[in-house]
Image 1 (cartoon, rainbow, N blue to C red):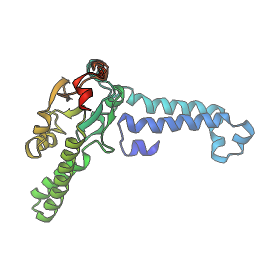
Image 2 (tube, helix red, strand yellow; image 1 turned 30 degrees about the vertical axis):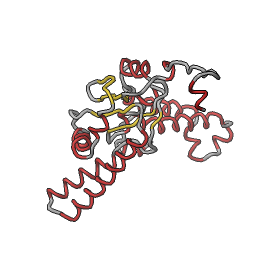
Image 3 (spheres, helix red, strand yellow; image 1 turned 60 degrees about the vertical axis):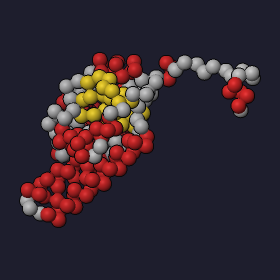
Image 4 (cartoon, rainbow, N blue to C red; image 1 turned 180 degrees about the horizontal axis):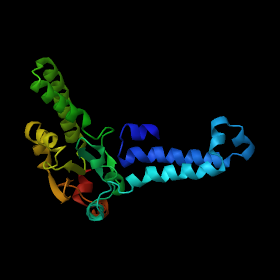
Length: 233
């Protein structure tokens, strides 16, 4: 668990794997017969009394992550009422914009790499290089950003996700990237085919205009043998 604290990985989805393995290691140790524990070298120091300290350390690691970044219940309820296992796309550098929200609504990301960290970081590095008057570096990162944004737009046009989870422009960290996609790379035209389903202080959920919830589709009518459609076949 040392890397978790040393790298200041203060996000829940980073912390939970560490905490899980700490608990699993403690349970494995408890499952060992006392004789094996005593012959296990360093593990022998985690015998009966110190196990309480190990448990205390696990609890201490868990407490800072008690308040998760889970989205609000109203947001989730509105999306679940309007969709059924939707395909989800993300406009944000951070995966936490759509995770665990996508899982909570029964959705599935249309892309294997849904968050925009590559494009957003390339944009930021290009701007830094421009301020430093390093034209070559600025051009290099600008090209990375452009390739990423164009590829993402083509993916959206091809896959037509049911739901798009977008960071609001007013969000300090992600606003510039969201604005870049809308104003420069044609994402405003893509979102013209969507309507705002629900939003909160930082996120906006778009639903595709022609999306029909599977349970709301009218049943298909059988075609009789004497109908014009059957005759044309």
